[in-house]
Image 1 (cartoon, rainbow, N blue to C red):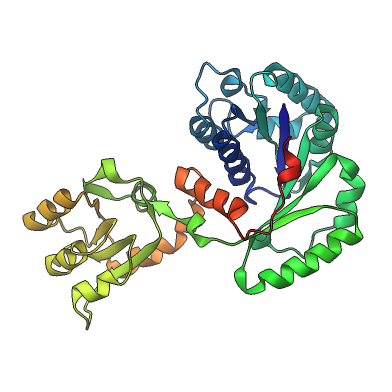
Image 2: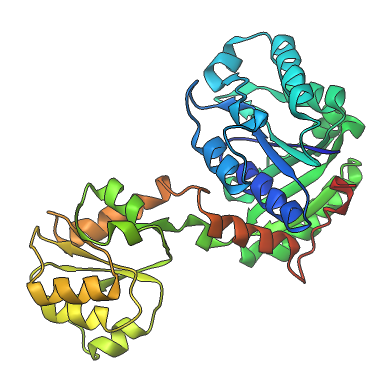
Length: 343
């Protein structure tokens, strides 16, 4: 059986994306794959775990989907050897169920607490192949390659650098390759930044802005990559709105002319500002095209300003995002070597 353990330097570095993208790749190879997140947000729920179980086709009858080791807060208050022993018992319980089991462990640093030894001991004692994900979005200057080698030694299969901006990509590859080689650490590859992974859905926008729905709640899970402001424009509406696909248009609720122009192009949704209800014809057109509409009481300027904070709610819980990340790992031209992680 393939047993893979994924951790990261700090939360938010991409270990859930990596775990589930690798799971999807093995599923494509017709393997029975399990995803197992060790530490949950609460004792009853964890969004990553629930999404991962659904994505990999694990049901409530699968033993792994009903396993909870402990919550993150419980882990932080426990003796690390007790945590490791409990995890090893859980792994042994489910290890024969799957051809590949991908374990998402806790980050090696949470709230300033060093948890490196927990991951090292789990990797060492379970025989798993370990991978650390480090995000370039938070800077790479503090990577201590020698310390990683000292701590994990031969038990770590390698390091993946994630979300490296394209303008510094080649230089990062060169510098990080040199540093990893000097410390005898294996650099598995460097993953370029893809801002589509920060996309959100109309459902998430609605929750974030505290909107009311006009229509289309059932069609609100498409990823939104662009926003346009519908104001007084010099070009024709079709030219202006047609220049960008996969968009949501923010427009005053009392401007049906602009709303109809937006609806004449490829539009994922309308956010109607000022608290105005749409006129009946706009409502009919949006429903016929299955384009969701939301109403907010704030002005267009205030709404656009608030949308800047959406990055805080962006997450990996969308099948398209997992597929995007899988493409970054395995598409032709990707300089990433993961072949040693699986038999």
